[in-house]
Amino acid sequence: MKIFLYKNDEQFGPYSLGQVQAFIDTKSFRPTDSAWYDGCTEWTTLSNVPGVVFTPENLHQHLVPPFEAYTGDKPYIFISYAHADGDVVFREIKRLHEAGYRIWYDEGIEPGNDWPQHIAQAVVNCFLFLIFISPRSASSENCRNEINLALNRKKKFLAIHLEETELPLGLELRMGDLQAILKYRLPQATYQKKVYASLEKHLGPKGRDITPGNDLVAQAFAQKIDSEELVAPAIASGKSSKSEQKNKGARSSIDSSAQNKRKGLFWFGLAGFILALAILMFSWSLNKTDPENLAQNSKITNRLPSIFHSRVNAEKIDPAKAKAIEKGLDWLARQQIANGAWEDGVKKKQDLNLEYRRLAYTGLALMNFLTKEPSFSRGKYLENKKKALHFLTLIPGKVNIGTGNHSCYSHPMRTQALCEAYLITKDENLLQFVGPAVQSIIDGQNPNGGWAYGYGRGKGAHTDLSVTSWNVQAVKMAAFMDFPFVGIDKCLEQAASYVEKCSLPGGKFAYIVGRNERPSLAGAGAYCLALTGSKNSAIAFRTMNQIIFDQPNKLSDLDSYAFYYNCQAFAAAPLFEGGIEYSQKWNTNLPSFILKAQNKAGFWEQGAHFHGEDEGGLFRTLLMLLSLQSEYRFNYL
Image (cartoon, rainbow, N blue to C red):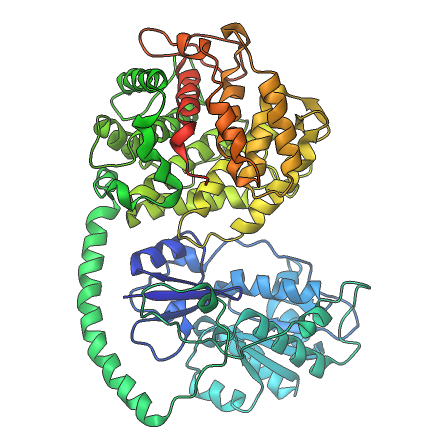
């Protein structure tokens, strides 16, 4: 069964039922979002798609009220809704609040007050009664009581249908002739315009507080709308084009004979769908709970996503470099412990961060092996890759973030490795790990655009370029997936702005905006600018010129952390216009002492010490191997 989803004026899909369920589990989509599936005659809501499961956790979330309920004497809107719909309702009323409308909702009740009396008084005093209709609110006794009171008091009334809902007969009788807006049938821009038009009609010019120069209602009215209803997706090719995704054009009317024909086809298709669904769910249940099965499915090399196409050139690089890489990977393979992880030589009596470091090292190790061998069905390091993936999927997608600086490094390293594994295998079972892991990074971005220790979001959070760089890499890898992460584009845009603020004159970058210059982060800054799509290539090129000028010529000056980011930055230079020559220049000017610094066993000897380096050389070697493989790790052309 093909399923299409529609959200924020954009169509996504087609997806399988398993993929859609993963989106729901990671809260990328909600019950009230629009959906279309094989056999239906028109768009509906995701809650109506056969086989989709919404758990109580999906429906009942611990929400923070977006603003204080209005308590003044001016005309206000009373909001009636089911608490199970709180997530979507809070987003809707927050938008109305920002547009200047005065909103009262039950989160504004003071503790100890008599709830029924307080709510009844708020209904009686309101100027407009707005109910968000869903199966949950239709079955709610509280919502029905509020509706009846509003209608008995002859309040101005507006119903917004979040989902297609069969109303109880008594409610249908009372609400039948009142104005209703079918949100689930409308593109976002059209829906928003209809809501504002209704509110302006009911409330008049004094119905809201307008902020000078920022009238969101006027902006919505000025926006051109090309369609009034969602268009059934064209699925003949199995893929939706850019024009299809925007759903332009009015929906064609369907005459009665065509409808009857569709109904016949629907029932015929439904029987086949049920059988296919049973097979799919059985297969899903076999694999979902056993992490060992996650590494079994694989794609052959020529079906890799385009970002990995250069990996087929692993054997075509300089022979000396290729030999060093294989020697290093052999050493790395021998360091893997029984549970599939890697751990360093740091031993402490109470090492609270050991598990974080294991996740980080295992993520980096898996990325190293997948760069050399982008497959889970073949290769010299096959067992190492499978065991590593097994370890990374022993815990839920979103790990316990904790405090300090370990989680904000280890979490994105693990997340990026999981993203690469998914892109190579396309194993839908991995989505239950990838989805929450990525979304928690996006949601954990600090408002200033960077990332902080413990994913802190307050103004006093420790946000720095080093932490930000690892999280940017994970988010960028997630962007190559066919997965509609909420806010991912905005996340990368804000990250680009943050990194630009960290740049300093002379091709340097600051550890924290405005202070603490760190030569070791110059490459990190340039690399992040490339990954986030920044147009400020002048900063990046100035930095890369400085990196070449400062290139060390002996081991004691080699900072492995800086070298990792320098290599990644030059490899990603083609993302900037005119940047390809920088990649070519870097690859032909690799200092010879770097290969000589490799120990006979395969790991890299100590160079200039960098913060976070372990005693046994594991982290240093992981970075050096990724650096040497940067030439073919990603295809940026």
